[in-house]
Image (cartoon, rainbow, N blue to C red; front, side, top):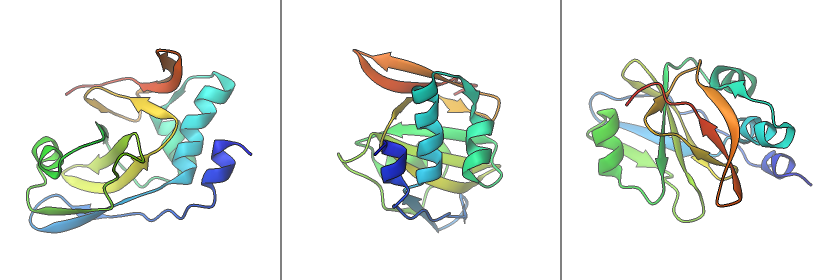
Length: 148
């Protein structure tokens, strides 16, 4: 069974939460999104991040940030301007990182990255290219940065 096939059994929940004031963000597994990234590796064809997220049904967003684990809530809050936010479900060593999708100043979706591992420095937009990559022989997908 493929990684994407195994991931289909994991429930995904969309968290829609504001970044201003006290709020809560649930970080969830999203098998559709993981399958989209996995397909970049399996067929070796680059796609835009917008194509991958549209297929996965991600709500409207304008920037995606990526944070490697282990990470601190304070790092998330500092980078995203989400002071006072409760981050539920942040992964530990069982994951590669966390993808956070933002629209304006609101977090619209936060996803655990399990595999394949992603590489992104800064933030990505729907026009960012997602390409197959590897680091020390370990496959990963690289997401084109559009800024910091």
